[in-house]
Amino acid sequence: MQRCARLLASVCRLPLSVSGSLTRPSIRAVCLSTTAMAKSKYEYVRHFELDDRCLPNSWIVVRIDGKGFHRFTNEHSFEKPNDAPALELMTRAARDVVDLFRPDLVLAYGQSDEYSFVFRRQTTVYRRRASKLMSQVVSQFSSSYVFHWPSVMGARALRQPPTFDGRVVLYPTDRNLRDYLSWRQADCHINNPLQHGLLGAGQPRRSHQRSGTAEERLRHTLAADKNEILFSEFGINYNDEPALYRKGTVIVRSLETPGEQDSKLSSDTGAPDGSTVPASEGARTDQKPVGVVKVLNCDIIGDEFWNEHSSVLSGNNKKAK
Image: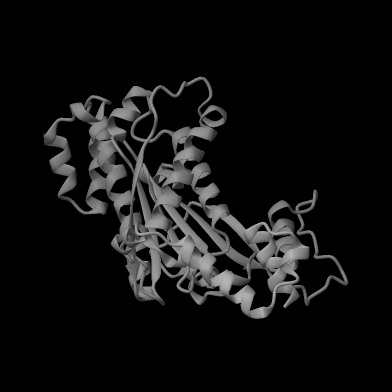
C-alpha cells in the first residue's frame, strides 16, 4: 500500500502526505484513470510497424558494404589493388562493432570494402529485431570509420563522407554459416588475383577505366589458373602476397584460460638463449576461461580454424564477457 502511494506521488506529483492518506480503492481508481489518459487516438499508428524479429535458433549475419567505394577510393588515392592503411581502418571500425555487441557478436570477417558480423544463435539483443541490429551495426561502423580515419590514414584528408549499406541474413545450421563465410573468403581469393592481373597487364589503376579483355580472361578461370597466369605472364607470385590480402581479416572471440595465454606468450617470445620459457610453477589450473578478441588473417574454409575456435559454434562465447 505504501509503495503504491509513493508511486502515485511521483507520477501524479501529489505530496506524499496526501497520497499516503488515500484508501486502496481510491489509489486504484486514480491509477486506472492515469493509464487511460496516457493513451491517445493516434496510438493506432503503432500497428503499422513491421514485426521483423529474426527467427529463433538461427545465426544472424549482418553484412555491410561500402556504397560508391569505387569513386571513394579514387577520390582518396587508395593504392590498388590493396591499400594496407585502408584495410586497417576497416578492421578498426569492425573491432568497435564487435566490442559494442560483446558477447553476442562472436565473429566478424572482412575483405575489401565489406564486413560480415555473426551474432550467436541465442542472442536476444534488441529482441532479435533485424532493423535494429542492422541500423546499429551500420551506424557504429560508419561512425568508427570516420573517427579512426585521422590516426590510420595520416596525411590523407577525408574529403567526402563514407557510406555503407547493410543487410541481415539468417542461417539455420552451422554448415550454412560456414558455407557463407567460405563464400566470402573465396570471393577474396577470386577478386585479388583479378585485380593484380589488371594492374600487371598495364591496365589503368582507376577501377572505372578497366579494359574488359584482361578482366574477362581472368574471371573465367579457376584460382590455380589465375595464379599461373599472374606468374607466367605478369611476373606476380600471388602466394608471396601478405595473408591480409589473400585471406581477408577474421575477428573472433574465443575462450582461453589465463594459463593458456601465458603459455602462448612464452612460446612466442622464448628465452634469450632460444629455449622455451616454462610456465609458472604452481599456477592455478581452475581459473575460468575469459573472452579474448583476436584479429587473424587465416583460412576459414578448412576445419583447422573451427577446431581451434570451437566455442564460436558451440555457443560458449556467452560466458566470455
